[in-house]
Image (cartoon, rainbow, N blue to C red; front, side):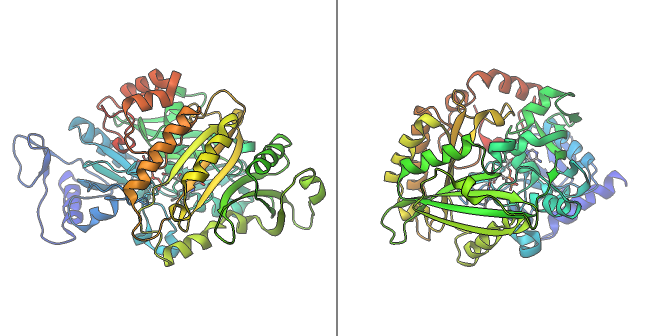
Length: 499
Ligand SMILES: Cc1cc2nc3c(=O)[nH]c(=O)nc-3n(C[C@H](O)[C@H](O)[C@H](O)COP(=O)(O)OP(=O)(O)OC[C@H]3O[C@@H](n4cnc5c(N)ncnc54)[C@H](O)[C@@H]3O)c2cc1C
């Protein structure tokens, strides 16, 4: 198609909401879209997809799931091809316009396009006045074969799981909520109950196609362009746009035997969870901190899952030997029911109005030796109102299973604990106070040898905080940024390279 024809598409998308204004390009002097040609005006690249330049179409990209950071982008690209991403990124590089992918994930079948959003909590996908790339533009599951799937990065884990199930193969590590984009969780890490067997989702990637910050399309794997491969996985979108991914798959087991073990005592909970971890007893191991039935104190719940083939039992006595919960429940369900277990709860949170309120999430990793001290302090500080309708995950993992270098975890000890405050506070909550609390808890975690997860809301992260976060890897992270994103335009919302 001709250049003018494609620019016209951009114009039509931009004009959809109201007055028709012909945007002809980017004014390099005023750093704004231009409505008339001129010496300083750079023409928009020709595209297979659409660019929205003005109107309501930009609103959905102004905020995110956390509802704590709002900034309207200057434009939204809905790519029609990988080439669109290359052209747009190259254009943005030339004119120093920030660019960030917005996962636009969510349960499309249930909610329609209006329910899609970035599931970041603190503006991590916001281009801060630059150009947002709508991940849904490239969101197909391309192929599923025994042991591997090829998917476009905007596909959700729910799509991959459904397509995989039809063939009897599924991703080894799933997030708790499946309606998140593959590119989004691979940019942060992707943790779930299988971390103690398979590491994070980033540890189960065979190959990536990435558009770097220069607009170049590069295929990267552990044996090909390894520096880029390692800089992209859990890299917070700093060095490239993931457009296509080859994922490892494992054979599905048909049944999930789900054990819920309740504890009133933190020490007993910690000891039993670590015992289960050491014995590799279950296929999935998570756990959370819940309010007691009368609301007066915290209780601890281990959620342990053993998979089995249909018609086969599991040896409950052996699985639970030596554990001392005060209460145990066992439920058997299909693998699929368990994988999609959060959908019902998410539906409730939406219907009850919690989903659309500010949610100051906090997610950290702690060395086993300080997990108790951190949790004890958090249990003192956090109130039932802080948690609202949400939950607080708290479970152990094995450090050596997580191999992707930028999935930063406390380094010294083999066992670590994941603390994940998934708060859904009610109306009228004081978000500013909750953000300050997050900062204090983050500082405590760092003091105790802990690390943050890239998701979550930690206010006031400085360059020094990021240096400390990456520790000995900081120079490598900075070098990769200079090499693959020389104009420093990619994903400013993470704040990692802000000066
Ligand atoms: C209800 C809920 C449950 C969750 N459960 C889990 C869980 O179990 N485990 C877990 O690990 N996390 C979980 N998360 C967090 C989740 O991993 C993050 O929200 C993550 O940001 C993915 O969301 P997204 O797909 O909307 O991507 P976004 O939030 O839009 O993107 C995340 C970051 O990656 C960048 N990015 C996105 N796509 C690309 C791409 N293709 N190329 C380069 N950069 C890109 C974005 O710019 C942004 O910086 C959960 C979140 C929610 C809201």
